Image (cartoon, rainbow, N blue to C red; front, side, top):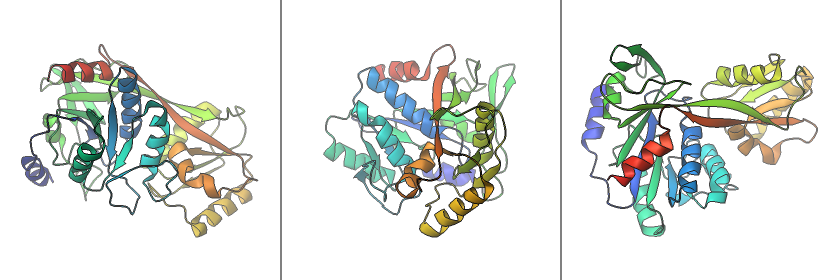
Length: 310
């Protein structure tokens, strides 16, 4: 897979002068926190006065785009709709485009006020960018700093490319309370931590069921268990970006009623799709990810500083 990525990267065009493009990506297939990182980074950059937007592929959607995402559009991607809803108060639009290169051109033509694009899941895309942020999933501390680790690449494992792909990044981002300051290859390193926030607030110790269609359902269930004080009575795990059609939803709700758990805990991404058809007799608690930055210098500060110098 490395030679395929090398060929794709070799076709990258020079980034446009405007808008400036910041990519946030990873080496693993999914579940490393790209979407919550992009959301929080967008919120912080908007608060700092940047006028920007998010560009995403729109996983799980049949729409090729480019298009500006309406949170109520059930044909758009689930994560795209979720991001659009959460970023709506900031004025930052979310643009969905299966071919991200077309998305950049669409933004330049239709969103004149945008001067910054956050390219979600962009590390492997052949688009020129001004800054490349890579979320590192596994690593070890070496004497010279952080060393990136990976495993077998697709189709033999859950990695898009080997650790060599980390060399293309300008900044490395870890999910760690105290990340090292630099990597063995000299890149600056910073971090973030996540915690699960449940709405409405549950009764600790009460029985519950888990429902998710995410890349790493075990992580979601473990985090919810830590908040709720007991494991789920039933764990329903659907495919990532699951569409929740009528037949699947009937099977899910039937299993939940049979289990008899007083409430179901699901993710914000899943609830974006489930809410319109969810039966009123099944109480739901929606799980959000509260993300905060760690490290000697936070990611928004590092991004702002580097963009100001370019």
